[in-house]
Length: 391
Image (cartoon, rainbow, N blue to C red; front, side, top):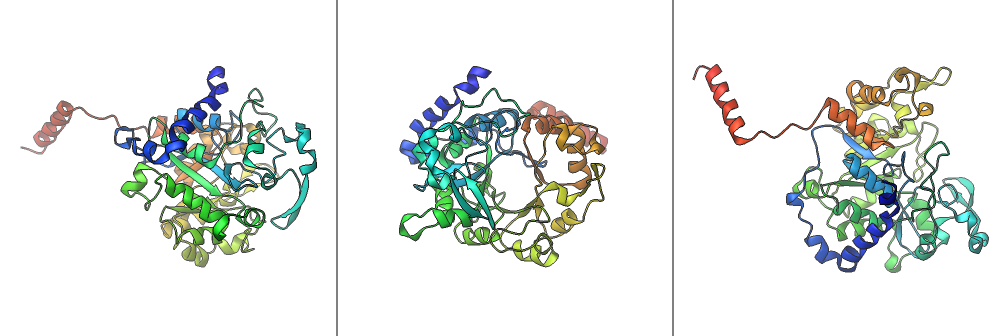
């Protein structure tokens, strides 16, 4: 297994040689009609930055692992390099999850920029070309997670991420986020007056991602577009009818583009407005069921899920993690108990999880795929039904 993940960069390179060099031809050869379809009968298993509980986040290895473990969607954050390439990375700085600090040739790149109203110091993605970013290696963000894979993987592009999903042996959805669009549009410029959102949608359309939720096109290439910036979601609504989801942060953090409070954007009037552009919301889970900070136990659930569902909005909360420090005491250090609570009692429509395999196992135990009946068994079942009805 270790050697498989070590060679994953080679796999992605092969995909690029097959796909990117002649994307239209290769894309036409992807026969989705013979792939197992995406499941739509139970809440979605969304691999948050890939299977990043096991492998460094936003890497090809993390996404391939999530697919292997049964993810319905692989989720990513999209930012842009200095020379305008779209990449998969969470932070606008490279400090926390790469070895940039060990590269003496980049020592003079450290900067201080304003990000969402605060001064942040570090090595910023927008000051590096794609070639320079590819020279770095990624590491696990959290010290208590497996560190064996540090330094083995590169930052990947949006295009590489899409190819990982398209070349999977079953239909796997993608769930990209338009990340920090205000900051990116301030520091990265594209020709022809295009902006970050334009380039983001162009990439999706290039690979055939289109169509409303549950349409024929969507079922062949499932996609949710997400952002914390409502203006970005509204802007791209003029370019694509693919389903969009409005992310909602902690109660203390305003929106990054409109400076609206949590209470304003979760009001009935605002949800009624934003549903013209999105099909769902993605709140931080502790805003749906606020915990008691004194004893780490859950408090009374809010009515946010019920109000969203009343407006026909899906709810995909984030982020679910297996480790004890993330589990409220109500769940007795059992992540399966947490999944049961959120899926059965709160009734959400999807979960962002760092541990795709755990959620998939839970759902296979509780709401498994129905086994296909062979024709003879189906005829026997119909005959028995007719017999019981007196025929």
